Length: 292
Image (cartoon, rainbow, N blue to C red; front, side):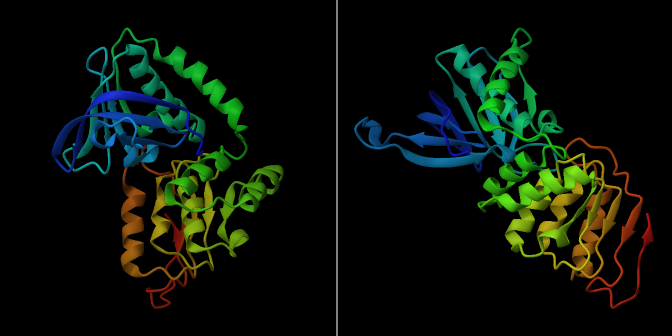
């Protein structure tokens, strides 16, 4: 995913933490992120400097109010729905603006086909034939990446989240899911199968499961979990969750339960039918468990 796909020079208004600057920037687009580059002192002989890296998973809104104008907002949304950081820029060519939106959308659909359309709010001119451009671009992207569609595109989501978290995607994890889980028709993901993995690798796995509609069960029993566990609760199909002997404290469990009842990234309430937390750390061996 480190291969550069295209770059566009734009007149850019960069809004970071409510501070606004207007400069000419170069936007470089990859399969999972964009880089904002600047030219030091406007000297073309000097190498470009990386000012900002924006992972596509951090994008929240893309708006094109005018023909060549575009606004990309990213970061964590506040309770009023506003997003603090953003790039507001104008392109010299309308095609460049359309290509930017098409590339981002196609990449998200490629990595996260179940939810790619709903991760980022997109507002575009009605006359744009964007779906045609996305379809063409998306086909070429998938062909160039040899994306696996097994087990709800787990491998591509796992690659995306590994890159997002800065960890190395483990080939054996993808192989086990694409080969063993798929051939056996297993719809419960068992973290014990990957108990040799590090916590940061668990984070990438759980992040991938957050956007997966193939697995309806998650068995974490006997695996020591960190705060990364909350990522899995964005799944829209989670029916069974086993947290027995995971070492989660009551504070973390309460946060997990709050997320289980929330509506995240456009999903309705989770269809969770069975929750097991027997022997979880912090519960004092009280033996809580049963169906929800």
